[in-house]
Structures are given as structure tokens and as C-alpha cells.
Image 1 (cartoon, rainbow, N blue to C red):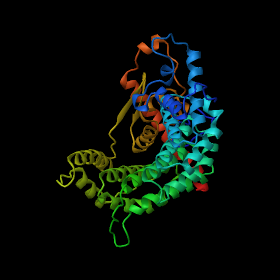
Image 2: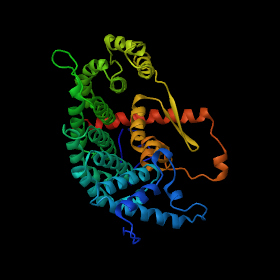
Image 3: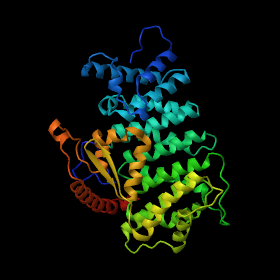
Image 4: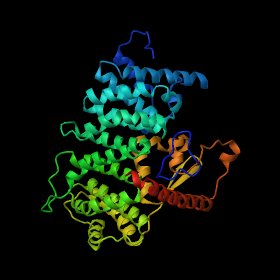
Length: 433
């Protein structure tokens, strides 16, 4: 799915695909105060609401100024000597970036923030690296798909890749870097495709270590490796949706059979990640070639996983696995995807393909419970999902509702238009891959 540069978006391009306070408080106290100031992403509360004391009359301008002061304090704290203070600042920014749209504020400070995040990634401990990587991804989403986001990605891509492929780094940091690399590249990759190719290659170097050896035997995973492999595979699958048809054909030949062997992995979450990726690859294969055939062996393997009753597996693992693989098998055999509706405000989007599910799940992982807020107000997400400019509704419009049937017709038409556009763009990008 193609992205357009910020300020150059067209109506049909949605288809892709501070000064410290003088109170005398210690740095740690200040960091703690900043952290408590913001609501966590899981609570999905407004930063602006928290910046005004309970029971006080709310003045929007005052709230905005106080919020920006708190954000400036967080950015200052990213350069603090105390690792605890830096980590608290990162967690505060993580909550703020998830629950609010801060593009204008961040655009003026993007280079400062990028430099601070790079420093945390290079010199911080594992926990700090993991938090910094997540904020990197959120920063790219906040800045959108324009030159500013691309500029930040070129600064951060080398260090994100280096940590991800470093076997001595903590697994949590490597996992977070894999997710951030995929998201940042998806949002920010240059039109020439160079960053896309490099990022996919680095991600492949991580999850392909789970592939069977020359004797056909799966390697014994090290502690934490399946989570890392899952993160890298999901990030890679997200970037696959940007590839032109010529590159997709190569990727299908290289990975489909080996991924099928990984369905025998001992880790249920990695098996599920593999199954979802296989379904996506088959969908994309059929998209470029209606005669694309899946193997009978694949269907038999999927049937086994969809009905798995082995007692040596945990009950919850079996239930989750059967649910996902029933969907995968149903799609492989019947080309029928189980549609899902995501509601936000008075709007909604239909997740009606494996590609749209991968894209939505990727943003949901980065933005957490703030994803619905961004779907309502973030131009980047609204562009990607074909929602148009953010709605400005008065009370009478908010009270009315569009019928489910009308929404379904609109989403179906928009999806068909996006598919046609995606195919055209893949053809145009084929020569640069």
C-alpha cells in the first residue's frame, strides 16, 4: 500500500497499503511527578484532562500550555544522568504519544527527541532500550508519512537494526526494536525502496534462525527466542504488504514452504504468528496471480492445528490456536475471511482481509489502547485506512447514525479501490526492488 508525502496526499492514496522547575525537588521526584501526570495508555485517558487539578474550572489554553510544559520536562529528562529518570520520561512519553495527537508540538522538536532516543538505544540498559524503541515507533506515527518522519527514521534505523540482530542484547530490547523497525519503515520508508529492502533483510536474519536445518529438523529455541522471532516475523509481514508483485513472487518462493515447517514449533504464539503470515502470503499471492496454488500438505497441517487436542499443550493455548487456525484454514480452502468491525466514535472500519488485519494489529501494538483515538484524529491512520480527513461533528450529527448496510457498502467500495491502486503502485515500484 503506497504512502504519499506529507502535504501531498491525494484523496485515493489511503490504500496501502524545557526548563526544570525550581521547587528544589530531586530529578527522580520530578520524573515521578511527570510520570504520574500522564494517564497510562491502558487507561486511555486524556493528558490534557490530567493536567488540570480536580474540581478546577478547565481552560483549554491553560491546559494546553501545562501539557506542553510537562512534555518539555520529559524531553529534558531524556538527557538526565539517572537511568531511572530517563526510563520514567520514556514511559511518560509513551503514554502521551499513545493517547494524544501531538504532531505540531513534536515536529518542532523531532531532531532533539530523535537524538535523545538514539542515545538511550546506544547507551541504555535493556529496559531503557525497549522503552526507547517503542517511543521511536510512536514518534514516527505522530509525525506521519512525510519528510519529517523519514528524516527521523534514517537516524534511528541503523541503531534499531544493530540492537535487533545483536545476540548479546536483551531479548526484550531486541523484540521491541524489531517491532519499531517494521513500523518506522512502514510509515517512513523512502520512495526508492532502499530502506524497505534493508529493513526486511535485517528482520529476515532474525526469524529465519527458526527455520529447519538441512536435515529438516527445527532448531531447539533458546529462552525468549520465540517471542523475538514472532516480533520480527510480524514486522516483516507488515513490510511485505508494501512490496511490488515481482518481489512478492520471490518472497513466496523463498519463505512459504519453510514457514510451513515452522507450524510444528513448540511455542504456540510463534505457531500462530507463522499461521497468520502464511495466510497473508497466500492472500497476496492470489492477489497477483489468481492461479496461485497452495499445497495439500499445508491444508492437512492446518487442519491438525485447527483441531489440536493434545493434552500436553495448555488448555488456553489449545483454544487460542484452534480459533486462529480455523480462520486460516477457512481462508485457504474457501478464500473467505472472517470480517471484523472496529468502532471508534461514530465511525468504524472493516477488517476484511489478512493484509488489513496485519496493518491494524501493527498499529494497535504500537499505540495500544490509543489506537482508536488515532483512527479518529491522526491523518496518517485515516489515510492508510481510507477514512478521509478527521470528522468535525456538531451535536446533531453525533446524534444521527449511518446504517450498518450503508457503512458496509462504503467500506467495500473503498477496499476495492484501494486494491486496484495498490496493484498499480506495485507495478510502478517493481523496477526499484
